[in-house]
Image (cartoon, rainbow, N blue to C red; front, side, top):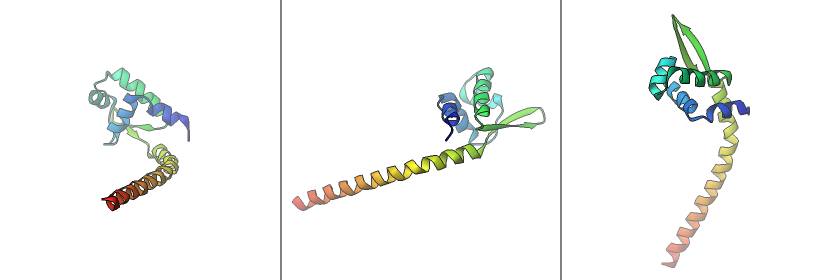
Length: 109
């Protein structure tokens, strides 16, 4: 897994931009308005996301729409999957332990 993705998403405004783009393509102005940022700030964050390969630009007439690229997020999801299985095992073990404690307590009453 490339650190570029994590570095790009580590900044709160960039993460919020990704969340906005989940709804579909937006212009810089739409993003700036949605986050309460000035357009130069939104452009700066979009440039980082673009360089990280997380977004792409589509020219529609005289507008530039930014949209999410799915591939990096699918790669991130695959990477996280290994950790999900570890946590699932640990949570299952905790659930079993708590159930044993509950059963033990019920048997004592």
